[in-house]
Length: 331
Image (cartoon, rainbow, N blue to C red; front, side):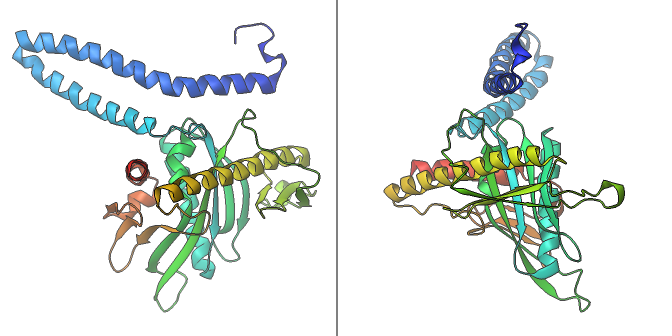
């Protein structure tokens, strides 16, 4: 990276930087644990001579236990795509305005989670609801192990609450589907014949209106005819840039389908049922009335206060899914 010609090829340079960041994400926590072990040895020697140091030693032990737990959890994310960033697609299901509003609430939840972890966020595409919320939206969350943490979010998310859009104040159930795909680097091979396998449509991107509205057909929608996979991007004013990004999104989605096929085959060999993809299995229930709780339909993990979860505090569910997946593999 210190070479004078390093940035002569920007794409190659970016990939090298990304590879460095991925490696650092593995090595840095291990180095920290080794350093913490050395520090604890010193504290232990102090505590033998001065009992007052025992409290500091006890605090260090607690922190190391937390750090070891985090590194062990990271070690469960062993697939090559786990360390990648992710494309997060949210789509409103049946339920009219309630589902569109619920889809927007879920989108906000993932954005807040990303902000909590200092990940980068980019809006790829958004289609607003007629009255409120969003019908569909796709964002990119970039950082080490984003896909590894979020991959278990794919599926249906169900909300039960008193609808703010029902004048009679009745309880409604709304669904929204979440799809998580890894933002794979160019080194991952995905065979696509762009001329024969993909249909491209262009359309006018939505915007804030006024001087900000896009007056050209710059948004791009790609459909993979063999699988029916659809992606769209309108984040840039340039059709060329949107096409390039949409192609990356389609590669990610097709790669993810291959990975799910691989997992399904492995599960079949073990005699287990593999998780169903986008819009299939119910992942989590968010109940706001009459009781208040959030419960994962697979792991049984339950939290009594839904609001922090909706504000992005979802690590409990993400981590419990990873541990549940590990136990399923072991069985």
